[in-house]
Length: 253
View (cartoon, rainbow, N blue to C red):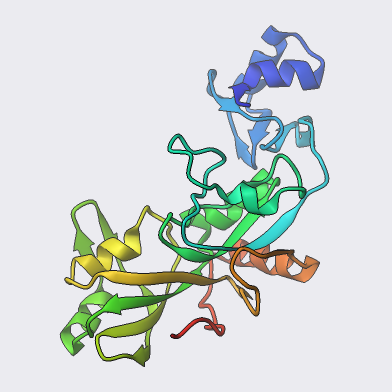
């Protein structure tokens, strides 16, 4: 549960509320690696990594890093006012404080990371770290040469801009086309809106990789723990500002 930061610092740092406010004002407190000096900022001590003078003061359980194949029909929130299935339903027993890293909309499927490590989540999902996410997308109809060029240059729509990297044609069906592409931002429904601007509806959208970490043979609704090497690889991407992802195997039917 989120609380005012000065209250958390006071409780876990064993200082008075006024002393906690002074520490925050002096820039001695960070949340998920970011210095916070503004009063009134809120944080969740069970989810966020809160440090005073570089030392962790918030409660912290053993870090958990899961790779989940999110099926369609699940929302990437901790609770849903419409009572739709939530992704935490799929990882019960792995920790009460797990949360999704970034989003994958209700109609989309594929690789979703789950963790209780706020710093890790921030470095993977925030656009400034440039960690690439790769998708396979089946669209209605076929792309013309002109449309492919427009995609490479970037397509502007009503509330955003879509410029995929490493766009590849994967498979042509009679009335649809599979493409693979990479993006490093995660704005809501950006891929769907980008193709809609070219009058191509997205029929299926699968995230197949984040960085060099792919779905592999994982089935829908199943999950596994990330290896130490995979965690280090993802963090290395964030420290280098992102790279081009090698396209892993994924659905093409």
